Image (cartoon, rainbow, N blue to C red):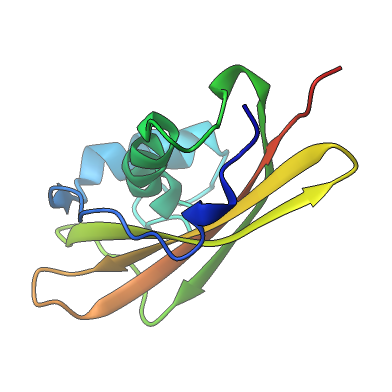
Amino acid sequence: MPVNPDLVGRQFPPTPPYLVGREKVREFARAVLATDTDLVPATFPVVIQEATLAQLLAEPDAGIDFSRVVHGEQRFTYSRPIVVGDELTATLSVTSVKTLGGNAMVTAESEMVDAGGEHVVTAISTLVVRGDE
């Protein structure tokens, strides 16, 4: 089943709030070899974005076979840095589905807001769904 082009424009329900804890930040910082384990690394939002991408991958009509998915691109657009103690909620929207050389490229944006509803960061991910061999 090919990736459903009707995914474009689909928005998923917000995730439960994620509390950015000091120990989680330190674990992530060590994993990405960051030198300061007290600062939230710029790529930390992937931890929160994972829950939104799981919604997309579980969507029955998406046509996305996870065994064929390769992470193609990742970007972040910040309004302010994430700090320990932030409670972030993420909402995923599918912005693009393209076919290229037998593969599908699905781009999705996970907008993350703090407990006050203020934008903090948007994580933009492109997943490549490899076509049949």
